[in-house]
Image 1 (cartoon, rainbow, N blue to C red):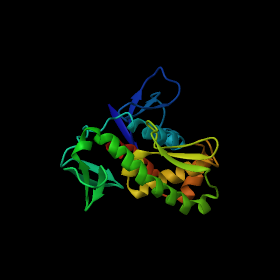
Image 2 (cartoon, helix red, strand yellow; image 1 turned 90 degrees about the horizontal axis):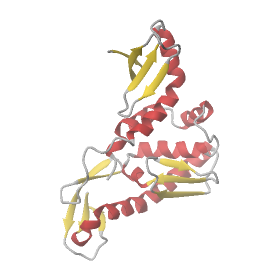
Image 3 (cartoon, rainbow, N blue to C red; image 1 turned 30 degrees about the horizontal axis):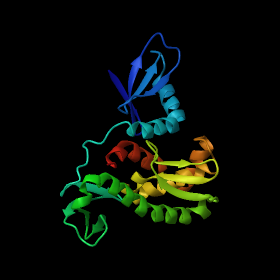
Length: 231
């Protein structure tokens, strides 16, 4: 097995005399494979990878959603839950005059009668708290991106972090509430730019880069780490 690295992307090279062109595959576990005829020089492979790097990062971002979290969350005292990139311990408390779930003094508190529906309570909490955060983030970016959405909504989006509707509505997955603010900014820019450039074209990524110069690093971080931010 031969491997090669171009920048921050590492590939397994699979030579085949039956191939006439170079192909790039992103396997289910995120492994990158270069299938190539034996005679193709390294310089040519590097050029092909450079031309395809936006597509590669896009595929890596989608693949992370296929990798389940390392463990299933349990809604018991001591379990950790992310909010804005930081993990907070959960404490199950006896019935009190307070919301079923709250973040209080650097820990989540879940009332015992709500424990059986813990996941639903966390999802609702994340949705309610993410809404003003993304609205504020979008508001700070509108002048720089030179466009604005019809609405900003938080909902369940399956394996997508965000989505741009054809009528100008922006949607964000409730999981985004778990991410560090730098990732929330990147996702907000990503969806805002889609109001101007609907496809992941070169023009789209150039617009993103003008607002977030290190977007490639953030995109790669999200592809590598996004799966842990889940319930």
